[in-house]
Structures are given as structure tokens and as C-alpha cells.
Image 1 (cartoon, rainbow, N blue to C red):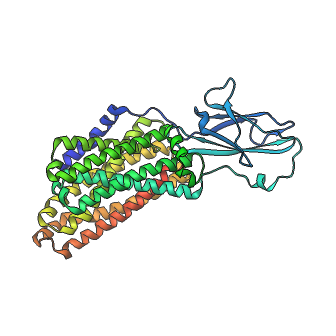
Image 2 (image 1 turned 180 degrees about the vertical axis):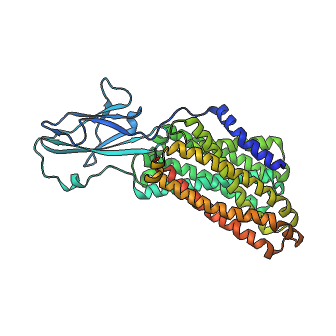
Image 3 (image 1 turned 120 degrees about the vertical axis):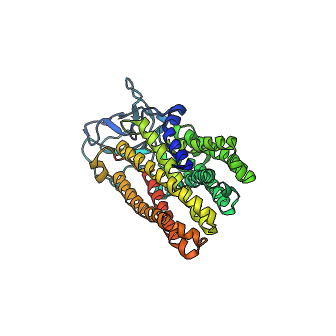
Length: 443
């Protein structure tokens, strides 16, 4: 076993311990949902009630609960007398007869996901429904806002993988890569995308939680409101870690290979890596389910393995292979092949834990949108692994020939094709992952 593989295994094995030492998350549950209402939805009442009581499956903050009339007027919300922190009272408008409909929404304090629904009551003799009441449905974020949030998530995941995996590739396999213009440009691009994507996610997540539109994502009040919540604090912390990452990246760009071998710089790089991975996992579904701590640890390992694999793959494809240096191919390619094998093992193992944690059953896996997206991700990942297997076979059977032929283009080309296919499919996996984060969990 080489030094590179031993280091990668040690990092993967120490991850749970580091995570616990840093403070594993407390128990969390699925997205906040409505348990009951009084009066019940669809009730026929002789007299209009003065208020409506909503009871949720977990404690809610009054600021996170919004109740609107069909016309869009926001109704006052207060704590239900004699109730706990999971119940709220809604003051209803006066209505003599006909249908009284309201739309409610609540933002989950853990991950900022918004749940919503509609409650309709019939007062006295049923009246003819107006067009607005008949067509009214539960409020939901605008499709364009959801697409923008998914795009920001995708950019954030890609930047994370390129930055963390690129740094690891340079430190573990290719110290000279710190002076290679292509690898330096890749790391700078990752940072340039990562910080703006995180900042944009704050506004988009805030507008998503309030069921707003794209314009709401640009308002300062949206940022201020979200930063007062737990998801906002996590996103702000991630943005600050990206700022610290600029210091680590700047030192590497200035010092080159000498800096990449420095113990002090490596400690700083490890701290930034840990911070980026941890804050990224805290905004997902990993802590939901029966064992939130193990789910969070599995998510951390999953992100770490994916970053080592994807970021290293990008450096290999865009910086190492175009050079066709015989000495580099002989050392770097086998080293990355072994590192990728370790990373994929961590990805698959952690992915199984996450599937059990978040989905919870075969029925949910097959019959929920979250489960179906997870199956799609698994299918694309299987295609990626086939391309990775082809790359590994080339390393085993053709690398020596490529070295003897001094990096002959015709010999190296098949390996380049399989790496390019692997890279393209990985981008699809990241896109599906971004959709999973904004979807309701199967459980």
C-alpha cells in the first residue's frame, strides 16, 4: 500500500472522529409538517370561527409561519393558549356563509425547506365558489426561483469538489502541479465560483423559504431574515470559510510546490477543507431520520470521497494529461487510480447509509419523487463507474506502454476519452444531487 493510499484511508477513517470532536448535530426530523387543524380541513360549520389552530409535528417559530387568505392578505399568527411551541393560532376574517379558505406555509428551522398547504371550511349554506377560490391551491415557490436555487447548489457542489479535490491532488500526488498554470487556474476558478454561489444561495434560500420569487432573492431584507435563522447561519459560515480559503489558495499560488509540502500550510488547508465539507452537509437531508449523527457523518464521508474523486479527475483531465510528461504519467496516474478507488468505496458505503437514513423503505424509494431522483443518481453513477473501470483497465494494461512510447498521443488518447466521459457524467450526478437537496425526503 502506497503512502498516498494510506493517507487517503487515514483521512476517511478519521473523518467520523473529527466530526464528533467538532460537534455532531443533535437529533433532527423530516421537514416540518402540519399534524392537525382545529377546525379540521373540510369541516361544515354553522358559524364562522374567530380563529384557526394549527399543530405541527415539531416546534415552530412564529416568524416562520405564514397564513394567507385566497386574496393574498396575511393573517395574524400567535401562540395557541394552552398549547406548546408546536401549535399556533390564526385570526380568521369574518365570513357569514360560503367557503373560507386559507393557505399556510412554514419554514423548517433546520434546513430552511418550506412546507405548505390549504385549509377550507364551509360556513352555513354552501355558496357558489368564485373563480379565485376554486382555483386557489397551496402556495409554492416560483419555478424560476427553484431552478435558480438548484443551479446555485450545483455550482456550489462543483466548486467544492474542484477546490477540495484539486488541493488534495496537488498535496498527495502532484506537488509540482502547484506551479502548473492549468491546475492553478482550476483552483482559482473553483474559488471564484464557490464564494458567489454561497452568497447567492443565501438570498435564493430566503426567497424559497418565504415562497417568493426571483426578485425577492435580491432584496436585503431577504438576506437579513434568513441570516437570523439556523440555515442562514450555516450559509454565512460557509461563505466565511470560502474567504479563509482565499488565504490558503493565495499562499499556494505564491509559494508553489514548497508551500504544498509545508506542514503549517497543510494544517490550514485541512481546516478549510473540513469547514467547507461540514457546512455543506449541514444544509442537506443527512440529519433526518432515526440516526441523525450517523447520517451526518455518512454525508461528510460522502462529500469528502466525491470531492477527492471529482476534483482529482478534473486536475488529471485538464492539467496532467495534456502535458503528456512520461515521468508524471508513471507516478501521478497510478496514484490517482488508487486514490479514486478508495474514494469510490467511501462514496458507495456512505451513500448506502444515507439512503437508509433519509428514504427509510423500499416503498419510499420506488414511489416518491425523492426516491426516484435517488435511483436516477444511482443509475448515472453506475455509468460513471463503468467509465472509471475503463480508465483503471488502461492504467493496468497500457500505462507502461505509454511510458515506453514517451506519452504517445495515440496511446494516451483512449484514456483521455474515458476520463472525459467520466467527467461529463459526474456533472450530471452533481445536478441530480442539487435536485435532491431541494426535494422532500422519501421518508
